[in-house]
Length: 182
Image (cartoon, rainbow, N blue to C red):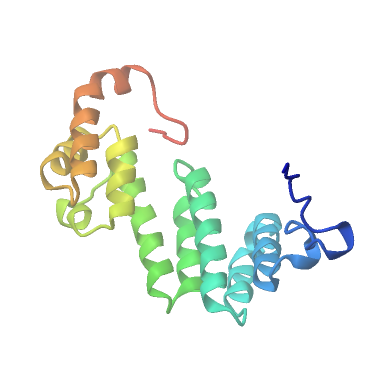
């Protein structure tokens, strides 16, 4: 007896396509709308827009949108002289949120390491895995790389920092990475 493949549900009974906008959860739509709003805001309105997003009824989603925005903006502004003013403005906007406040402090520390400003090994030692990974993968600072090669929190961080030390002359000769200045 030959069997034919089950054709599956017919069109009227088939479930709607999952990527149709009507099927997208409301928080996903708001997340995308928040990212668009944050990305389009003028610098002088940015702190207010961040506060508006953080007032969303879903605090986890709102924090996630603001965190992504902070990471994008900080990465773009890292070598820019306006970074410090921007960071201070954002610190006021996210005051009271420990995660966002810490991420801003870590961007400030990354800026100090990147621009060869004053920073302490204690600050780098107490930094999140995120920052230690970022510094070990992207930094040209022999001091930061040497510290993380020995004291990095994870094997991945220590190995990346050690590799960065071996590549340090190549990294320095290649010129500053995107977003690096001075």
